[in-house]
Image (cartoon, rainbow, N blue to C red; front, side, top):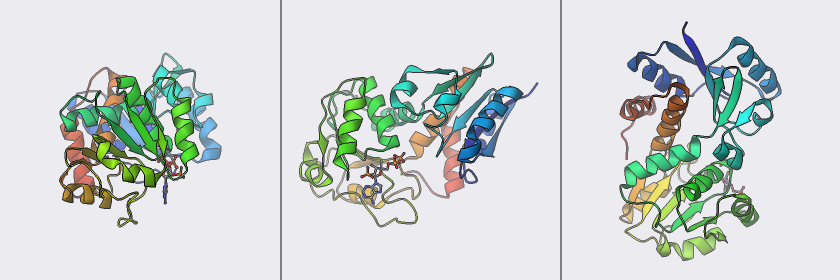
Length: 280
Ligand code: ATR
């Protein structure tokens, strides 16, 4: 019988996940199909129960359900539990198990594009929301030993560092303080929504003091090159947009469900075709 997979979220209409997963299933000769389901907050519990009742094999979870879904799952993977957010669920013999592939997906994409060891990189994360949490925890889990976080609301950066069960040397900074000492960082990761379409001229902080040798990354992929990345490029640093994170979170979910790591180049090509651009 054909296996069923999907993604739930609100809104969900523009999700690129069905395109990348359905292509990967057919490319790997796996009899399965993947659909987008529009699930409103008040229907989340019923939707999860329904998925369980019909024996769905697995699904992705996106905004706004990544934390709210946790009480409706049977088990949690260690990293997902620590992050407190789930973007991938696997049905194992009727038990729904929650995973987080957003943070590990980001790290996998970073390793591929940076092409030099991560552990010793003095890192700055801009933002302290859900995405920053997944990335911070995954980088610390990976062994990166020095990661500062700057945020408009500094208390949220302090809390994020404090809550993390894995330890690193970290300071919570104001945006201004981070901009002042920017030259100290080898890796700068922008995780806020600042600069996302339609507000494409906005940037979280000036890169005036950036070290030319630094690697500057932005998790936004629409636009493909944010104002922040444009400034970084102008100042001579290497840059990375959010396509890799999106592709690798999908690839790692696919691997959890099927045991097969899919062709990420195919996935990237599909995403780029949908967004209508070339990778930076
Ligand atoms: P996500 O799950 O995508 O990370 P989130 O949890 O709502 O979303 O977090 C959004 C992040 O973007 C936060 O770090 C937020 O800063 P605050 O904690 O101070 O709210 C940051 N952010 C969003 N809009 C911003 C703006 N206009 N200026 C500065 N920071 C902003």
